Structures are given as C-alpha cells and as structure tokens.
Length: 334
Image (cartoon, rainbow, N blue to C red):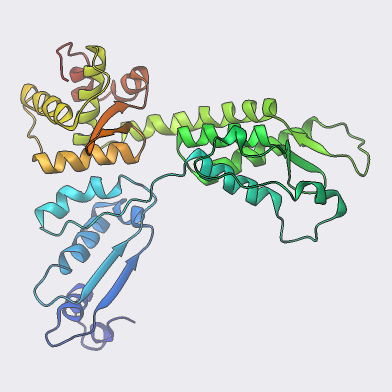
C-alpha cells in the first residue's frame, strides 16, 4: 500500500497521496511511471485523476516526478488544454514511427532467427544476408533474394521490401508489418498442395505480399476514418483549414499559413481559438498521427502537406454539423 495512513486514519486516499508527494521536509523524490495512459482518459472520472497527478508535480515542495507512456501519439494533445489551464503541461518526448529502412532491418532479423530451434543445414545458405545501412536504398541492400523464416517457409527480400515500404507509409508500426508477414505466410500455406514433399520450401513472393497488404490496409483505413471522427475540436478545425487550402490550390503550408487559416475558420464560425503556441502543439499532434506530413525546407523551416485524401476527410467529418458546414466553405483558407 502506497499510503497506509489512508487506511489507518480513514483519510481520503487522494488527500493522503497529495500529502505524501508534497510533504514538507521530504528530500527524496518519488518517480511515478504511468503506462497505458490512454486507459485513464476513457472516462471523465479517470481524466480528473490524471489531471490531479499532473497538477501535484507543480505544487510547492512537490517531490513527485511523473512520466506518462501512451501508444496514442495524440493523447497529450487531447489532454493538453486541461493541463495548460492548470499550468502543469508536460515536456513531450515523441518516439517517431519506424522508417522503411528500420522496418526492413527488423523484419529481416525477426524472420531469419528462431531461438526455439537449432538451425539446420538448409538454413546455412541464407546466413549471409546483410543488414541494410539506414542510408542505403532497400533495393540495393543485398544481392540475396530470399530470407529464411524456418525450414519450410521463406520470404523473398522483395516481398519484405514491399511490406516495409507500405507499412512505413501507412503507420510505421512494427506490429502491422509482422502481422502482414504472418498473414502472407498463412496465405502461402493455404494455397499449397495437400501433399508436400518433406523438404519442400514454400516461398512468400511479392505478389502474395501485395495482396495481403491490400487486404490489411483496407481495414487500417477504416480505423483511420474512426480516428478522424474522434479528433479533438481544434485538431479537426486545423485539418479543415488544410483541406480548404488544398481545394484552393495551396497544397503546401508554412506554420504561419496554418495558423492564419485556423484563425480565419475560428473567426468565421464564431469558435474561440487556441493561443498561437497551442496551435503549434495541435499541428504537431496531426503530424504524430500521420494526418499531416512535415518536410524540412532549410533554415529550420518546415512545409506541411495533408497526408490523407480529401474524400476521406469529407466522409469522416460530414456527419458532424460544425465540420460539414466548414468543409462546404469555398473560401480560401490558406
């Protein structure tokens, strides 16, 4: 029990924890790591718990150091307005999605080695597969054509290359890449003849991988649609501004362009805008979840382009009155 006094003296648990973290004279700090923070934002009650924890770090004499971990890259941006109001906004450390070179390296490592078995002679000819350098084109990473998975199923490097490129463009999620490889292997096994020679090798080629990825990414697009529908208000407003700018022929935007477009929409539709510095955080959230894509253009400047189709945004937001009205606006917003 973290706070036995809460039980012994029948104190309120929240009050007890607050005293424990802010008690006078205590020199040792308490490091609290919250994993799966996403779950704490599922209900209003748990949001208040999370807000209280963040606020305790800023109280006079506080010894609490809070580290939060979440899979949803936009979680802090959804929650930031509350934290800003309490003057306890956290420092953000974003672990960006894997690139295609990262994914290709991971796939080739994971699919080459199986620690549950001893390598057989049939694997030795695949042991020379070299890992690609981060700066090397995937197509030139190796002269080998096949990467061994086990004695009976092997992957063509071109199939893994395709998988890495498609998943990197979609989400950069290693789990999605491994899922694609698993489903492609299952497809090859299902298509194999009933009677196989004991030493037969099934090869997952680029055609099977392409079909598998198409099926998986269709399902992912459905998830993306839901993600757009669930965007917080100001993220959705900024996205609408980018879409309208694209319709007016402006497909690349500076930070100032995005801020001005967002402010115009807020003014036109009588919506209270966020301060300029918080608009930057909203923009960062859209980049984190892959809705916007940032490209450096030198001297610390970046240009932003939309990373989803206009039709996807329209279909996702059209049933929400405020956004459907904004998206019908033909005015130049960028």
